[in-house]
Length: 63
Image (cartoon, rainbow, N blue to C red; front, side, top):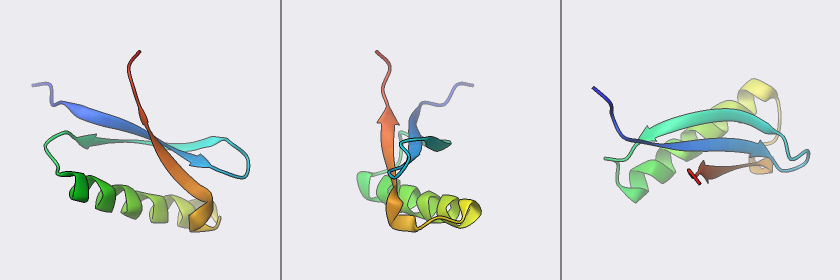
């Protein structure tokens, strides 16, 4: 079974480097997606020892 998902990359704004990739189900509401992305951003910041506000995410779009 193939579940549809949106793919995101988390980027360190100071270096411009991608530091984490994640996928979320398309069945989630926009509010749930934002909440999950905020949670992941906090976990990535803690894991990498960087300030949470320097991390942002972008959706990876198929071209």
